[in-house]
Length: 128
Image (cartoon, rainbow, N blue to C red; front, side):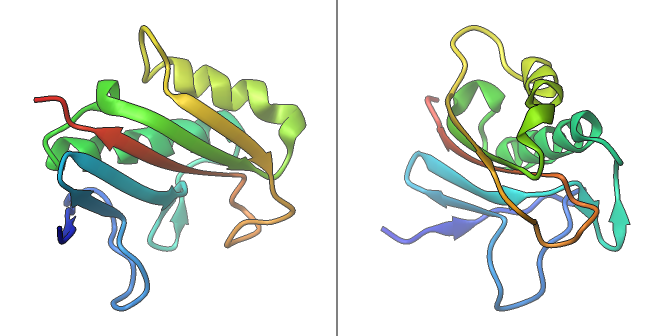
């Protein structure tokens, strides 16, 4: 089964031949590690704001793929300061209800740019 790339006009696409932000394979949707970066602009300075911006981008990609945040089954969250994890969890609670997806939280020494503090990837399964 071939995967189909999904895009959303509000989520900047990576340069050609680097990676895909979102791929759909059957009913499975894979969202690459998203950051709070929009082109050259960082959308927030703190962990809460960055996580919120990232979850919003994920929600938009899922919508374009015919799914929603309720279809997310797994998230992997990378933070540069694990002591600030409560801020990420606060943002997460704004996007999920009921049974939350399984989750991994990892501290990384650095992300793609020094200003980035959070990166989140997601896997969803369409149920409809």
